[in-house]
Length: 153
Image 1 (cartoon, one colour):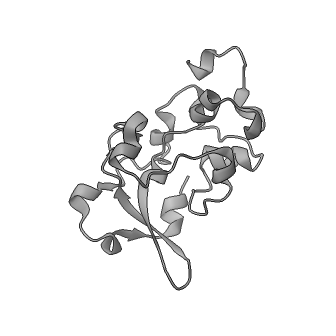
Image 2 (image 1 turned 90 degrees about the vertical axis):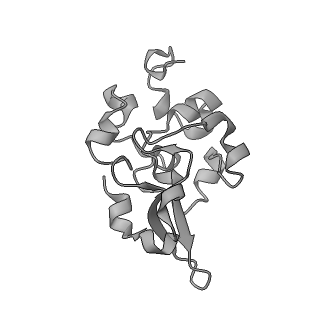
């Protein structure tokens, strides 16, 4: 289904609990930020963001190279749900799932609003040009980035 030609126009404005699975999946803005590794301080619980991407993330498009079967290759990959999105503290403030779960509108650069899947990249909201694959990165501790860089929109 092409979300932009769907009969239920502006489905993304509905409460997330009312979305079909297909509509929920269509909320993803394609930024790739959720596919970057995070480090959690065991003592404080503080989450440190890195610029290191999951090996399945295509760094040129910020899309998963094998989304359907990703859990086969990356067992700890999360499948976000309307319930789980409220419990995941490391999602960026720009995340469409988080925004809609909080009852907030999508930003103007989101493809559902502007009609262009590339706008997220042009606006610098995605990880395109800002991430390195875990295959090449080495120790994650050497790739910690300031939270403000991760949250940049």
